[in-house]
Image (cartoon, rainbow, N blue to C red):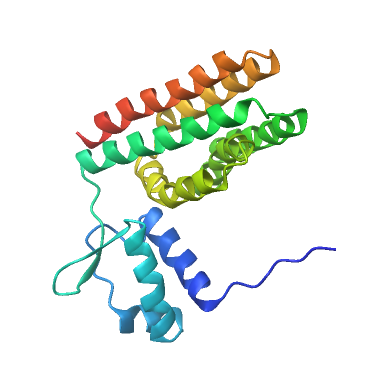
Length: 214
């Protein structure tokens, strides 16, 4: 019998603030003051400080020389660099994982792909983003390289912020079509083709991000 381990206050605050940054509740440039955030969330200042420090490490919060903390602005250069880094890490993980992909992995990927499409159709973009990220994570985790997965996880939240900015379905269709075709090639035992199709997703998405932010 399994059960969910309760979040610590720091983890709960971190998750809440990260979600608010990703979905735009806390817009870019918002100043984060410990006391104000603590009062709003009903917690002490300590977990607020710890959570904001972690968000700064993730690149979601900028810390000025005077210690003012603001939600990071997304610039075109920064966004494209983020997509490039995410692409390098994720594509390496998928490449290393493909040789270990089993039917069990493919079945879980099919489930996440179905959820991805269903959430998009329902307009639930945050849930779609999670399902889409899980699709890639399953393939990457098959590599068994926990260090790589750790680094991928560090940039996922920042990448999800770009997803939140691109609210039109056309921006998501790149991923939906890419995942479907990748899985079709995996089912046909064309692993080289599956990897190339996955890489193409990032090339197409990069072009869309550039167009969006211009």
